[in-house]
Amino acid sequence: MQSTTNSTFDLTDKELAAARILVETCLSNMGGKRPLDLDADPYTWVSIEDLTSKGYSKHEASGLFGSLSVKGFVSGDPKDSAVTTEGYRWLDTVWDEVNDTANFLSDSWVERADIIEQYDGSNEVWAREIGAEMADQGLTFNLNHAKAWIGRERLLIERNGAGR
Image (cartoon, rainbow, N blue to C red):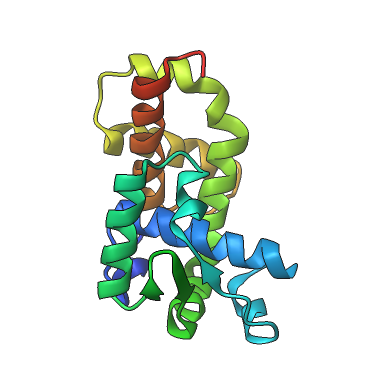
């Protein structure tokens, strides 16, 4: 089942994945569990390093920051930015499905990087396979986030080799 919940900010697959990483960084720094927790303690400062530490190149991170800034999800200079209040509040509305997808992928599928490397299908076809497995477990699913994760995983394998 495809989600259309990222229409408010009209984020691409990659932007949605990056937005989640940035908000997770904010939550980690202030001890929150979900984006609306930032209302009580607005520790929303982020930087390019928050994305490069998760496997993005400086070039990719810079491009993502630029597009998230144009779309109003982050504000400021890429080295000294903040997630906007509107950005994290919107992300809270899709947090459960994006978070379920991300947690499932990192917990279950990261061990299958060799399968992803060998898989000939498109990221969308592969993501739908993940969605079917998640549905069997009663989890919500975000196709866009899954496609972005698979694309990034393939890129990391290409850069670092299957053994990472």
